[in-house]
Image (cartoon, rainbow, N blue to C red):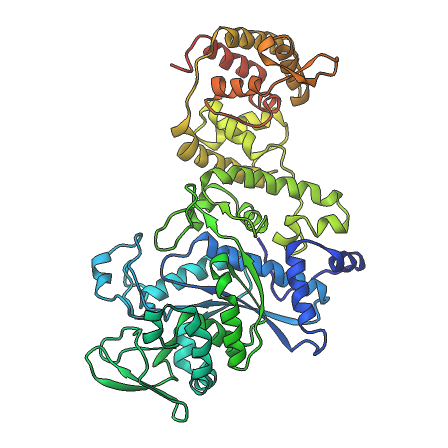
Length: 552
């Protein structure tokens, strides 16, 4: 999935005109950045930033920030006709203290001795491959982002603090300490106010990040004085990585030091955004443009967490579906809380290909609102997909196929000339469908026994299918099944009207079919499934259901 890089965007007058009016959310956000520089003119480079807390393994929410920011970056490049340089900085807050031990890591007993030390000073619990836990998690994030082809620069808080990249602004923070405290103290309770400091010294004796009050802040010398854990009064410079800033002031300090123009963050940061902005301004910077997105939830409606490891992981999604489907899920409704668990995967896969199929038929206004334009940076691929992912899943379910050769036998018979070589994208989906079925569908399949009315309906279905030519398409098959249902009172829906003027067919008819024949609650259009699976194979399946063999 190509992402925004240094490649030249293929702009057309029609695209530029449509972009100026587009209501797609990446364009709306990019327009804020354009408006930011209307009076002053653009700087040499516009900086986009994403933040990452490496206290646990990267999760999909982390990827979502980078993917969505990349989409805004690309929209900005189109609005400015690619005349303004841009950078995307992925910043890791790896100097934060490890305040608790994640639930989903090994060697937890070993980690307990390193609580509150900076993450880049905590040993790697997984192996000796990386110098620290923070470095391990940073590498995991970078490896994943690299597989997606994101154009980004990685930044480590530890490196930036220790190398002096933040020194100028940290000295300014010491000079304006009282102004920062005036912003922070009203946001805290009385007990926290008594001990709060925006500076967090790193203890010279224990190496831990200390949440202690400052006894003295010497703006001229650029130092802070505090009581170390052993009771010793200690003075440290605010520069060179001897201290770090509390997380709220750290946002504003980083924005001011780096000149960040755009950063998005989750809704849990929304109440603090004004604090971040004000501190950035106190330290001589200009607050960036913001975009606040809703949080991802697990299947129980709980916020997904790096430390808990709930919800889907990046690797789990990519085991069962395409990278493009994940990008689509990130694009859709970012201001709406969405559950992120395995059941959402099939729908996301098929929706991606539906949007892709629609793209060539659309005008530029519609194209710039189509997710695939944003996913592929304005250059969506042309892919012929004769079978949907949902149909593949049902085909695996009905045939109990455990390898791709069995599935391809059905596909090639249904669509002569379609092979793994001619349709590699479909072949990729075949592999995903088999894995998804084995892990998530098969364990939950429950065939329901048919009652007398249903057995008679199934027998009539089989007879109707037997009267069709072997190569009947999905539409013909679907109509034949509907004709059967219209004559059965249980399945008549008088709120609908058939083409002949009689009652329509209720959804209970096809729900029965899926429950009895496939062992699932629902599925794609059944006529299309029969066309793919085969009429005689479907009739054999019906015979088993009528005889009670499937439910048994």
